[in-house]
Length: 159
Image 1 (spheres, rainbow, N blue to C red):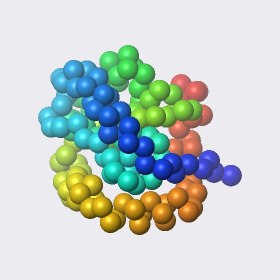
Image 2: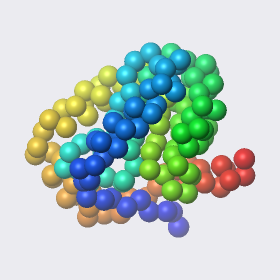
Image 3: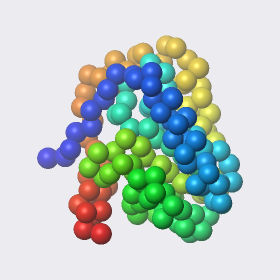
């Protein structure tokens, strides 16, 4: 049976949690950043229920070169996982068993839909009507973790 992800009501502290985390990440990721650090995903949309995990996307020039950030990010309790390695460097915090943050280091050129996604998130944030309707639908059903996310815990423990 797959693990279920709980959809929590919107927490007004999520934006501040992102701001605090961005302040920690900026100096650590500075050598690899080529753009901004973005709050993405459901927790970035006021009024929208979400899995209580802050999704963070940081723009880097190279996935290979930015893997050098793995060790410094460990100092901030981030765990690296080789998930979709051709698209991103993916991290979770504070542990694979209890994740409060996901960090995606991405190369914008490898994500042709990145700009579109960021514009879409911004558009949803500015709309009061969409999050409420979506929050009701999301709260009504459990969500299964992807098989890759379920596989994360045993693979990291074995490492």
